[in-house]
Length: 135
Image (cartoon, rainbow, N blue to C red):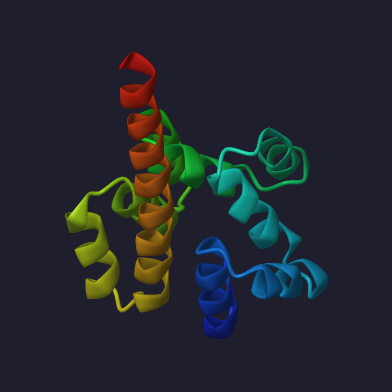
């Protein structure tokens, strides 16, 4: 899975919520990256699109970022080592971020941290709503 550094940087910003860059990705040959931005936020149709359009590795990365160890194992089994580290790093495992940095994969480490931020925000929002509903 090879993407130019500028595309990875744009993807990271799109993950963080930059709609213009997400639209740029979608319109410039990277629809899978644009769709992954929605899938990271638990959008079911985007998750289905990734699977049906030849991008199960991106869906496995997302599932891995949600703590699915089987998805991380699948990534490793099919040679997606960087994506496995991204998934683990996004799931708050700092050693995986360090592994990416040791391999000079700063862009991928940045993607992991962007996904981590979104996932931790979703979790925090969910926990806040749960506390309110139990009150």
